[in-house]
Image (cartoon, rainbow, N blue to C red):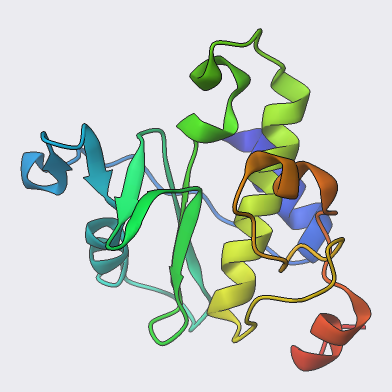
Length: 159
């Protein structure tokens, strides 16, 4: 995940630190769905000690869902400042296609920046090129940039 740390540092122009991996509790897994509950990840992230009040991003290499959704690329809780990116559906191989590492990394970065935007108070944006535009499909993620549009930047006080 060093590549994601580096990409987030460059894209967001901020310090990013990595933590150790955790074992996933079996109760987070829904065997009927064959997926993990993304909200369980968020609740666990809330308990990680922080040096400051900055957001925490969890990165999960498991397929996740949330109530009312078949799957999620990511989730965030703006009230607690925690977010999650679920990697499997960002890979071409998940869909039986040849793997494309560069495309996977671009998708992961965009989803990470998007979910972190929610922790900063941003909602979904109508600008289809803004990273805060909702991605219902990977085509949406592929089309948008990894950056906030000017309006979203103003909302969070970024120049």
